[in-house]
Length: 369
Image (cartoon, rainbow, N blue to C red; front, side, top):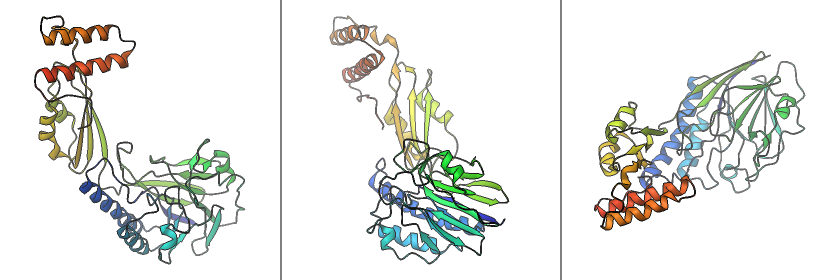
């Protein structure tokens, strides 16, 4: 049986809105996303891969910017290997989709039907199978499918879908994987990488998105280089991301917020997008304005979320014959009779807000800054 080296990527979501960033930075991030295409092309060249499988959601919608279309054509055309695209739920194939409008290079093949199709690459000893989403949702595409094996030929599949039951996005059962007859199935849709899996004689994986777009896609992101043949499969993750999203949770534990953050921060965060969450009991609310002033130069973009709570001695002046005392007494009674922790948390936040107003400080509310 032949051997082959494959680049497997998915879920670029080019032209994402990046709603959590300013308009200028969102535009910059979309430009950086386009650079992923060139990085993937260079990874294919450097890795001397013989086949590229792009398993859907390359585009975030059917409204691709002209710059994105141009870069897609340029980058894919520069890959010295066949490229297969299996459109997903975000970039489903229709008569009006970008894939139908663009004149893509001759080395690029797009699966256009929701029926499984096959392209034989005799010079590589490989058959490439795949199908497309033709709508935002898809029924199971692999159920009942089985490829008749041919001696000396590797069978690989490129398809967008989700392993498991109950999904509206081409749910794929492990039984269907076993019965498929594939040597490797290149999947997309889930944004966290799977690593290499195997059911029966079939290897399969999904690489996740190659670069995070929000705080639900934190950490290092990757594409995969896959070496397949002789019943064996090896997978090598390759990072092509420019930036990463990270969430840093810090328990203040009596420390000054700035000191605690600096102590916890790793090195070289200047290119990254961070959300810092402050927690724990404090004697006074953290100075968020000061934190931002001191820290924001260390990041591409920074959010600070204050989840600290004032110590229980906030009630010590309750009952005094003044406005502060009466305010605290009323909220203390509400706190003591609250039905659950959620209500008590709201009351404590109201105390913090009220005390900030009485002391003519900036209002402190639980929020992303």
